[in-house]
Length: 399
Image (cartoon, rainbow, N blue to C red; front, side, top):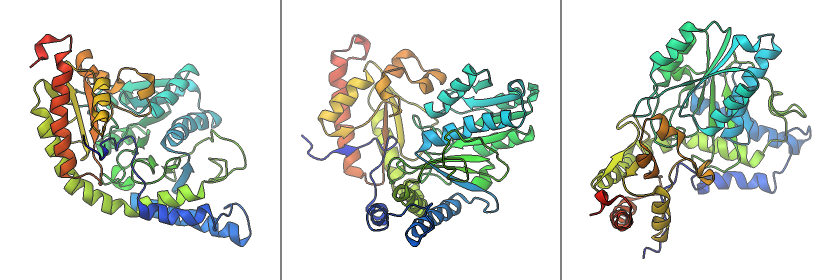
């Protein structure tokens, strides 16, 4: 039995790096000021927030003149602020619901889809874009909707990299189409930060969501980065913190941690595009040597750490349990919806069969993994799949 826990669920969360924690710790003890206080202790905390904003702007190549970084409790709140905040502000500015539209891809994270559904219940126009078998959005489908719409104000929300299958969208192309029709563009980049280059100017997006805990920072902190042309209505009301868009005393230690993550982004990208990608390719190659398996997501335009595989004749949850007994931590999909025990909307939108969806498994590597982790996982996986298929009702997959 392997005594070491091999963690292959880095899309769910990542361990906090020592150097990130080291920078956060003083703001949990000696440097405890409230950044809204006018005295020196408060000003010290305020300076820490300003430094974190600067680091994030640099990491994302944001235009400093008028662009804002709004700190939130995480990507979920940031996505809600982007979508609901946009819709409610347009109403406040005199745009009717009939003249408003929100468009999202069908494979967005639930923290985008649920706000969209909430707006639908309130009578807003919401449309969902289809994807192909690899989870890739076609810009032609977006253009078809925009060309036929008479709405005065439109928001398009498309994630940069999918949290389940790892497909990386051609976001710049999508943004160009959206802007051609005067629409604003929001992208949930929580999974992409630290793995691929996220350049706000190059991608031409108007709003970006980021999160610390997907990139070796603390949980409970994220940000919505918005361009100078975006106007939002706050969804939390109070003392008017964060430029009046997110009331509540700021989580200074968390923000400091997020700022440190932003500073480390170039190092993370180099690791992911180098060693982690090599480990992922080795992992995928070995997993596909197991009979009756298939890779889900785009075969090339995918995150460098993501291996999403369907094992026919096997239940994904049974795989998780058996692998955990061998010290290997994996998942079937989004950690935010696992407890609901429901079928993956991402895989369904990609056209996978019920059997392929039920047998799916997401393995996501991190910078802490090595070749021994991959080799041990492949060895155990072959045995576990064989064992589960022996008791599977699908006799054709038994070896």
